[in-house]
Length: 86
View 1: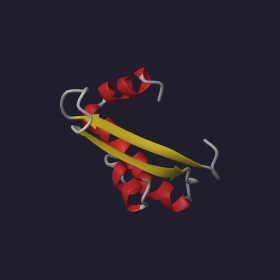
View 2: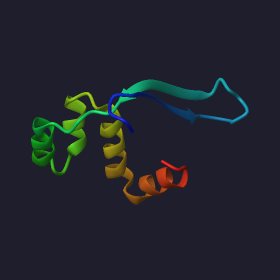
View 3: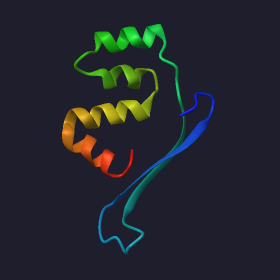
């Protein structure tokens, strides 16, 4: 990812039959890579057990959600993302 580009991010969850398009939850947003500042690095070190909180207070939602998902689901989450090429 280049730092000065914006990327479209989306997430879709089917809540029923995949053939029924009205039964899904869809979120999309534009994301931009953020540099690791000394302040964020310090916050991440202080929040060792819950780094997603440091990302969230800095509005870095993609990393906050990913980090929380890894915490909740552990290797299953990482394996899922790897399986779909992320």
